[in-house]
Image (cartoon, rainbow, N blue to C red; front, side):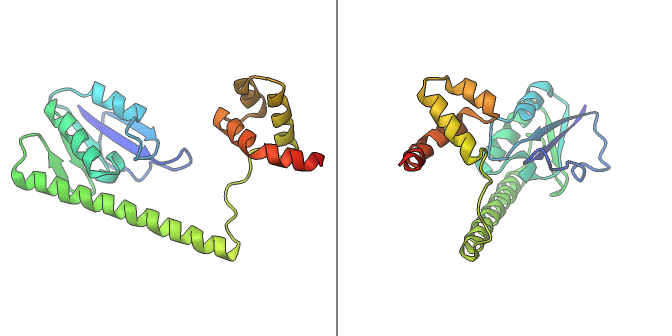
Length: 191
């Protein structure tokens, strides 16, 4: 069976360019960062494939963000008798690979990891420059100042944090972030 694996980093990204024109009988699509090793559809794929199947991935960076994970996933697949094809790199791994194939996997994986590190570095530099210009203000707050005040007051009366998170439409971690940040603001408002 020919099985495709697709991954995009966020839900608003499109998988259209990945495996375009490549015939597969089934696909597994993750919408998660490659740095996360616990990706539900990747886990499903690893459990689904059998000896003789072929897994097709657009490029190495879609499967893993670092060399260790790439090697581990490729080894897991090939140990099961599954071929893995990387379309962009034109590489195929079967488990019966030559030392040259192993070297290519390591070199190409290292380049993908290096490229990702460069992208992150450029992103950090761009954000720093934008902050200096005042053009980057960060993420928009989840709650208005009034909502944040209400959240803190209700939490102070003992309301469960998970119930507050549901009512305000935010995560529990965001509730705790507001509680850590807001006490000083609330006391300043009352003074």
